[in-house]
Image: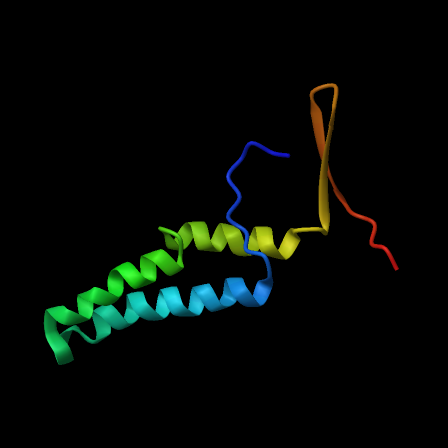
Length: 89
C-alpha cells in the first residue's frame, strides 16, 4: 500500500457525480450572485465538500479512478516501474 494520498472514488459514476455537484455549486454560487445576492455564496461550501476541498484534488482523483486496477507499480532494488495489469477473463 502506498503512503501517498488517495483521491480516487469507489467508482467512476460516483466520482463524476461529485464533480457535477461540486463544480455546479461553485459556478452557481458566482452566477447566481446578481440574482439572489449574497445568499448564493452558501453554495460555496457545498461545492468544496463535494470536491473534497479543491478542484485539483478532484482532477487527480479522476485520473486515479480511471487508472485503478489497470496500472500496477512494482519496486525492486530502489527502481520502480509502472506496468499494465493483466486482466482476468
